[in-house]
Length: 215
Image 1: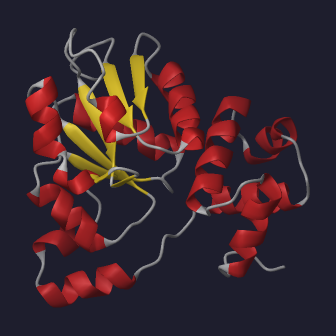
Image 2: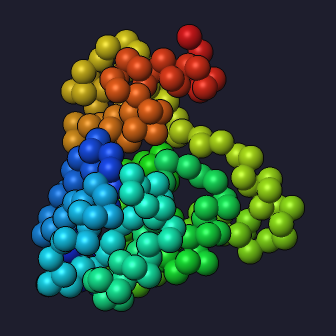
Image 3: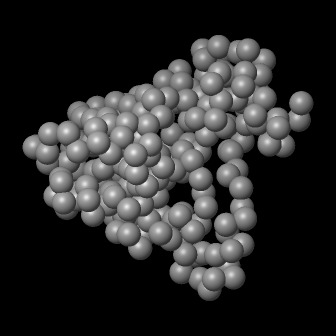
């Protein structure tokens, strides 16, 4: 369980679909939580600093700044709040940069709902949550290998993408993959965002183009 039962979390991310999906997950996993949202650094700096934040989720790529350079800036504004970096990329070099800059974790937007909740719990409890732990601590040659690994969707996410291509509604997808409708909405939001798609059909087509699915 997180160290505080009703965490106050600020999400700084310019992608509305991801913010919506995360909000659904937070309301289910942390019923008493408060999610504050800001699409840009400028908007984040206007957020009320009291009561204090328990966690700050920061997108690596913002319209008005590079998130990796903002950790100290935001901690100066909000106090020593732990910062969890969020990105659509699994590039190991970014993971290393985030860790070196003082972040407590790094979360890929391709993560499943369960992975996201686990990461949030760990960071809210005072821990750290970084992927590629072995790569980050290994020699440079191993880091280069990690950088070449593409984002890999889970089997469940692939199933959702196939069903999107068939035009299936969320209720039908939930029944077939064994998730709640809220979880399906969140997964679809993340997949659409990760694939730079503007519709469910485009997300399916992008997955085919990447070779994740057979046409």
